[in-house]
Image 1 (cartoon, helix red, strand yellow):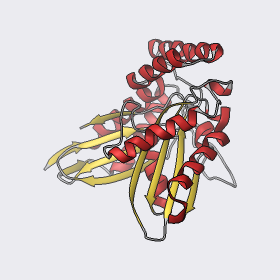
Image 2: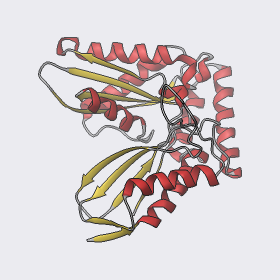
Image 3: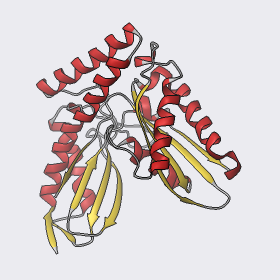
Length: 281
């Protein structure tokens, strides 16, 4: 049995919040550079160049990549042979988020209820925490801060099996066009297929947080990722919505078995920052 201290989780989460919000990951930088090389629009090339410049400034000065530092989405893989000592793990996550956002001067964007008072909580908590119990004695924490320019463009449709692959592609294309310039393209797009209404939304969120240099392990779905990326870039939305072929730099697909009568589909979009950072304890 491995023992992990509550205080260690707090400190690691605080660091991850700052890292995710201030440093564009190497996979995204590489994706930007490739997109800039391939972009046919001179304005599009210039915009992608400015995104790379912005990323360098943010990393050098340890400043936020974007003023919307998002709502903290957390993915926990908790080994079944891990014991947390000193407190409740979700309290540690939220304390770490509060510490990270406050001490790193990241914007606090969370309100205490969605309709009535809508009073800012002042420390960007509570976080959205997704937990899996997995084999082993490790604790993996991934932070994926989610800005709402892109989050607001999410789509979930409960298709039927007769809609098939073409139905999935139709929903995807609708989502890309609906997002347009408002999701700050070039985007990373997460697609969830299967499961139930709640499961497919989580699949899309997991997919959106995957690296830009990853691919689905199933070759059929890896091929679908490529097809959907081509479809997204055929829209002409382009960098920051000003035209071009770099509307998205990556489409990631996650799937799960589903009911004989169902074909749930969810689309979750990340802006060009596509923020994520992780640690294994």
